[in-house]
Length: 268
Length: 332
Ligand SMILES: Nc1ncnc2c1ncn2[C@@H]1O[C@H](COP(=O)(O)OP(=O)(O)OP(=O)(O)O)[C@@H](O)[C@H]1O
Ligand SMILES: [Mg+2]
Image 1 (cartoon, rainbow over the protein chains, first blue to last red):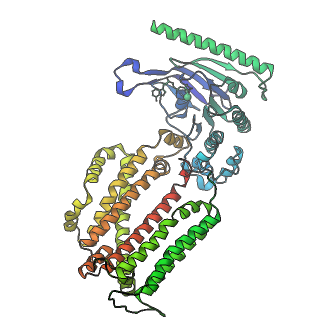
Image 2 (image 1 turned 180 degrees about the vertical axis):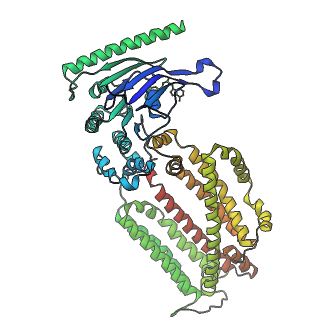
């Protein structure tokens, strides 16, 4: 196998409350000894209960945050800061409210200073996420699902090698969610773009991913990585799918039970 | 949504409005001149005017103005509520003008020469129009330069204070302290430090605009959500993009708040400065008219001032509405 596109080695991230830094109990060990390799062209999902450090991990990969220990690399190069090579879709509401849909999507090109030569890409990406006719609407005038599609298009217009998605569908109803999931799959298949998706929806993870990372909280750790050996076109109601779902849920609750035990032990 | 106001009501409002001013016109036309008054005739191009016919012409123009406003309200239903609501106020304006004309000009029972009638106020435009115009332009220029420099300085310092913590630390206290000093306190200083009256007035307007604009701009920039900077950085944005395409657009609502309060301050200082020693301007015109005891001219200048400042405020509101059009319908 070739070199993984993302390598994470022994990464830890501690949040220290700066107001009470002397007090030990006020710091949070958000991630502890994380090791992970992501293959090029892979669709990887990260699942885990709220507060287990999923966002923290994704922010580190995105270069928005720095680890206290360990190292993250992309294609062998150390990640030191945000880079348009790694597109990022935030948990919610990161669109610029003063820009129209069209201009929000074009903002990616403008930020890199390449708007002039690549302005033709804008309508293409508006079409890609199915927002024709909404070019001149402002973010507060469109639905949450549309807003997340704008955020995806904005991240993709820079043609990143990896797309990092932090629960982009977390706040959406199941129909809109399924719609965006299919859009993501379509984009993933077309360009073989590597995608890392944070979610707490097991179905979503199985439907989309090649592998699923299960995390546990306090401290945030990778419990295990499950490969999804299902055909490319997945049917959410097929027996294989449901079997997989049962399996993941079982491992998930086991992981949580263990984490709780560890947690309790710390208090006794 | 509220129900649309029917055309009938708009027409009725227009009628009531016209009636009010028509009463004022008829009053001027039919009531004889009781008190002693010399009525001169002025030639304006091919037209001959005296103070009464000119006054009636202006009233006629007001009627035309409100009829046009009514026609606009017919075309755009969202303008109707305001137009209809104001009808009795406009009617009353006509009646007040009638009484004022009667008391001020026809009977001259108002304290003279301090309160001349409306026709005598408007007469200023006939016998001193060009000079009044010249002074109006002087005011406009002084205001434009002073307020313009204030905006530029305020925006620049505001952005620097809001963006660089070091600048905030060293400069913000100065802004705070100069901000609480009423700008009149600078007057003696301004008059001695600057080479001429014009530049000292510019200084006063610039300094009284500087504070609200700088502090509001800095506030708007500092309150930009971290997530929006992060979103921009993941798109490949450099610092200049973060300042000009994220922080400043985010601060625009506050920037306009600052500019609007600076605008009010500047009006005050414009007039004070002009009264204290400018070689021209509406404030100057009021002063000399008062010295010659021509109070009609004083009121005419005040009238022009009211119109001029209203227009400036309206233009500013239009610009604000355009720049902040993304906010429309965002807040209830
Ligand atoms: N900026 C911060 N300062 C201090 N603590 C933080 C900060 N960000 C996150 N944490 C803590 O780190 C832990 C992990 O947070 P993180 O946001 O990564 O969780 P998550 O898995 O994304 O949760 P969710 O599913 O709710 O989004 C939490 O205990 C949280 O309280
Ligand atoms: Mg999160």
